Length: 87
Image (cartoon, rainbow, N blue to C red; front, top):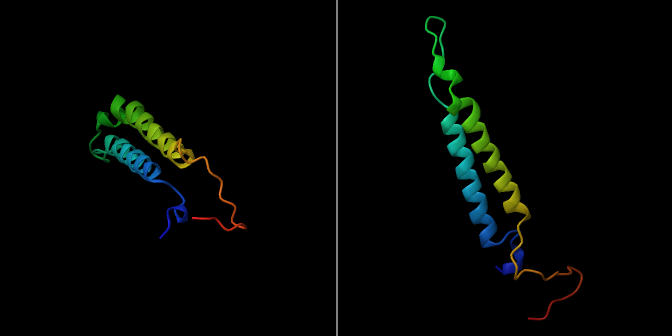
C-alpha cells in the first residue's frame, strides 16, 4: 500500500486518538449517580458535572476537528489524480 493512499498521516491519527480520549474523559466526568423519586442527590448540580465536564468535551471535539484539518509541514505536495507520478 502506497503512502499516498491514506487520507490522513500518522500525526492526524495520533491527534484524533488524543481528542477522542479527551472526549471520553469529559463524559466520564459527567457521569455519576442521579436523583430518584425517593432520594434527591444534590451532586447532579456539582461544578464538575455542569461546568468542567462540558468544557473538557468541547476541547476534545475542537482538537478532533483540528486533527482532521492538520497538515504536516513536509506534506505540501499536490497529487493530480489525472497525471502519472514518477517514482
